Structures are given as structure tokens and as C-alpha cells.
Image 1 (cartoon, one colour):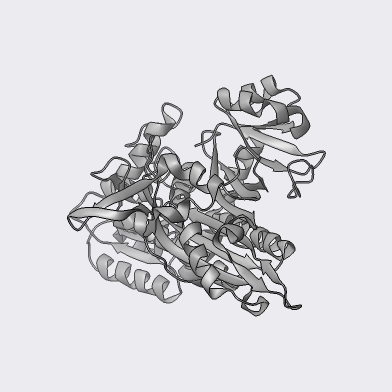
Image 2: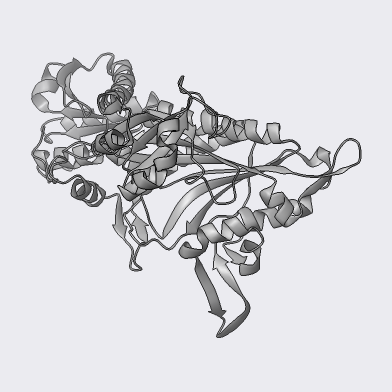
Amino acid sequence: MAKSVLTPQDENFPQWYQDVVAKAEMADNGPVRGTMVIRPYGYAIWERMQRELDDRIKAAGARNAYFPLFIPESYLRREAEHVEGFSPELAVVTHAGGKELDEPAVVRPTSETIINVFFAKWVQSHRDLPLLINQWANVVRWELRPRVFLRTTEFLWQEGHTAHATQADANAYAVRILNQVYEDFALDVLGIPVLVGRKTERERFAGADATYTIEGMMGDGKALQMGTSHELGQNFSRAFGIQFQDESGANQFAWQTSWGVSTRLVGALIMAHGDDAGLRLPPRLAPVQVVVLLVKADGDSGTQAAAITEQLRTSGIRVELDDRVGVSFGRRAVEWELKGVPVRIEVGPRDLAEGLVTLVRRDNQAKAQVALDGLAPRIAATLEEIQAALHADALARREALTVDVGTVDDAIKAAQSGFARIAWDTAREAEGALNEAAVSVRCLQRADGGLPGSSAEPGLVATVAKAY
């Protein structure tokens, strides 16, 4: 492994994270506190996430739309719990165009209110249901303790909003998004094992009847909420008058869901897979899966490196040629390690003379000389091996740092370095004490790992952890 230019993880994990964000050219802090500038490499990763998620969202039947950034303040006040939950984070515009506004406008913290105004307009009959809408947008929540990608005043996300004829249909759809979109993406693309569960009443989304979540363990043993899906009941439909005529002609209030993931997933990717040399990107997500690194421009090495690059590109691999021979080989190798490109192919004149190149895996730094003949299928197979290995590494860490405990005190102690599993019946009355100890119940699950029907269901298991 090349000499690290990062703070070691076991010395200062938060500083390691900031080093990776900066030195892998992911993002910079914006000029207004809590904002961020996403640099091209960081944005390329987000674009890959968008593409994978958007395909899954559309497969679940939702269609993309766009709603305004500015929301009349009165809209938020229609659902009491919702406005109470978001009030401390709101950015409010009171002046524009050189004069005071007749009504202040809130910069969107989430879009339940404005979307439901239009749902009330669009939904008239049971034939209009289900109405399944998704939006890719930015939102603003005034963050007191910002950290790039994880908690920022402005961030990018998708937010889904749906209306259904029955509670059962709404609940099933909220769970479908959780499982078939978020969980599948986390496992299959990010390579991050996640706990799938229900939030406690204390932790659920403001205005929801139930919040479902996926929770990942990061490299330091802390939890990160990576995505949530909410069953909203009829709370918003009653507040905004979303009614439809059922098949008998009677008026009914719609049942609703909302759900979202954000650029926080980029932070999850860094912390779940990164090591002391930088990022380790899962191949299915990586904007660049392979870098062809020209060692020196001797003879026809440059021509052969370009030909190798084109061969891989033609075979469907996302590949980039680095022929900057004016920059030292060691410096370039460190740069690509920092960026987490899954495979590096080193092309030098001595290897080429023997019909070989050097293949370096980013996940474990293993090196091997491989033949040019059959290189593309060899690389494709290696990328799949790396994808599986990163998931296996993350799963092994989670299993090693998860313990079953019998008391709240033991849960607090175990949560200092990983996940603690405790009977919810034991922890239920102590949730406030857990929060005071800077740990929280991340999710509730049935003993078999399934989703609970309610937090009052007997026999539930709570996972307790420190969290980002």
C-alpha cells in the first residue's frame, strides 16, 4: 500500500473522514455555514447513485415530478406535528424584490405540505389512486452541527410522496420502497449490509404513523440512518383535504406515504468501506471501475495502454487512461487509491515485452501479473469479486461489533463501540435515559429480523448505538 496521506482511522476517525472528503476531491465547505460544494468526482458518485435509485423507484411505479422550492408558511401550519418537528430547522424568506412579503415563504425542508396541496387538486376518485410521485431536489434544514455529506444545511435527495385508497395499500407500498428500493440498493450496489426495522415513536418522522428505516454500521462502529420510508396514515390528507369518492360513491380521505434518501449516502459509502489509504468504491457504483496507469512512455507503451483502455471500454467497463508520465508514478498511484478506483492496471515496457500487465485490487491491495490475452473477462470477474469482498468485510465488522445484552446499562456500554441488541420490553421505558447517554434506539425488529406491525408488538428487539 502506498504511504497514506490521511489521518489513520484508529487515531481520529472524524478527521480521517474529513481528510478523505478533501483529498479525494469529493467536496468542499460552502461559504455559508453548513453548505457544501460537491466537486465533480463526488458528484459523479452521486449521479451513479441517482441512476440506480431512479431505476428502482420507477420500477415500483412512481413517476418523477418537480415542485417549488418556496412554500407558503401557512402550508406548514396545517399539520401541527409536522411544523413542530421542523420549526427549529426552517429557513424563512421574509423579504424579496426589495419589499416585505405579504406571507413569509419557507425554503423547502421537505415537500409533504406543498405536494399535498396539489394532491388535493388532482385526486377526486378512486380511479385516481394510487398516485405515486417522486422528486429529485435540494432541501434546506438549518443544521447546527454540520458535517459534509452527513449533515448539511442544504443537501440533495429524492423524496417520494404517494396517496392510496386504503391503509393496507399505503403500508404495503411504504414497505415495498424500503425493501425493493432502499435495501436492495444498499446491498446490491453500495455493498453495505443494513438493518431493516421500525423507528420508535420518539424517533419517527414528524406527522407519520410509522417510520421504517435502513441502518448501516460505519467503520468506527457507529450507526448511520441511510434511508427512511413513512406511512403517514390520513394525517396529511385530513389536513389538506385529499378526498376521493370510493366505488360506492362515499367520500374517503386518502392514505399516504413519503420516503427519501439523500447525499448522506455518499458519507455512508466513505465511512462503511474506506480505509487508511482513502475510498474503496464498490465496482457497481464506481464512476471509474478501472484506471489504466501508464508507467512510462517508452517505446509503444502509450499506444498499447490506449488500446487496453479502449478494449475494456468496448467490453462495457468504465475505464480511464492515466498517461500523465510527467507526474511521478507513485503520486498518481496514491491519487487513484485515494479515489477508491476498484482496479488499477499498471502498463510498463518490461511487462508488455512479456505480454503482461500488473493488476492491483484496491480492496485488498493484492497485485498480480496477468496476460493481455483474455484481460477484459479477467477484469470483469475481478470487479465482481471486489463487490462481494467489500460487502463481506462490512458484514464481518457488523457481526463482530454487535452484542446481545440484558440490561440498559449493558446496552449503553456496548453501544460505545458498536451495536447492542436488547429486548424492547426491557428498554422501552428507558429510551430517554439512552438518549441522555448519547445513544439511541436505531430500529425495532422482530426476533427473526422482520418488520413489526407496531412498536407495541410483543417480543421485539431494539438495536441501540451511537449514531451520526
